[in-house]
Length: 237
Image 1 (tube, helix red, strand yellow):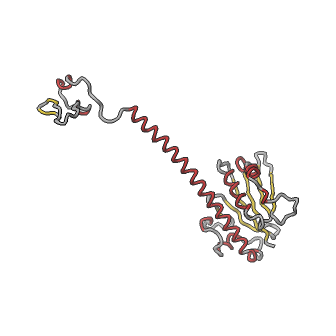
Image 2 (cartoon, rainbow, N blue to C red):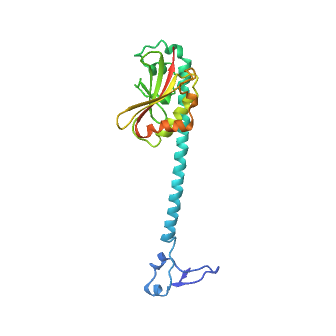
Image 3 (cartoon, helix red, strand yellow):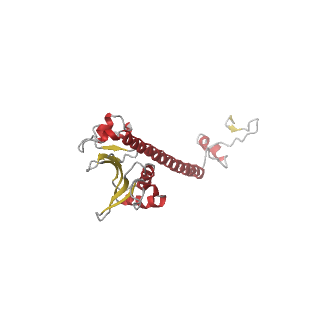
């Protein structure tokens, strides 16, 4: 406390040394009487320490958020695949009457058989999953089956995880599907295909229900570096 130009100790005995902001208001004589002037607030080292802690916490929070968001989208994608498969099973008899040049997406749009978030206005040949991956839904050239194809174009760190999630979702429909497969185009522009077949296929065929984590990881590595398509073929006849 200052009184009559002097610093006096308050009655409660608190420290009365002035802060730097107070010193600027003092006269030259008063400044000379101050041997040590403490700084108000925090030092630069303390502030840097606080900022460093905030930075570490922010990185951890963002990492946790990214993982949670990826898990949410993978679960949502599985739900979308289930809805498409249920629509194919439910409307199998209607699909068998559809001509090759007619749009499956348009038909399903009329039947309200697809998740609304997968549809885009004026788009009648592709639907889009939660990762915005284009999905082609069409009748096969022979007319005896329908397929839906997830198209990966360009490199993405998440392609491998998304691909495996698709295969795991298809695996639950081994009894209904004719086959699932991966079609990839390498940097040498060579088209490579691998197929796994449903339960009704001959015993010597590679079966969908036999797919394990190691095999799916190996198959989905193709989607990390190349243009890649993941197929599911559903028989209607």
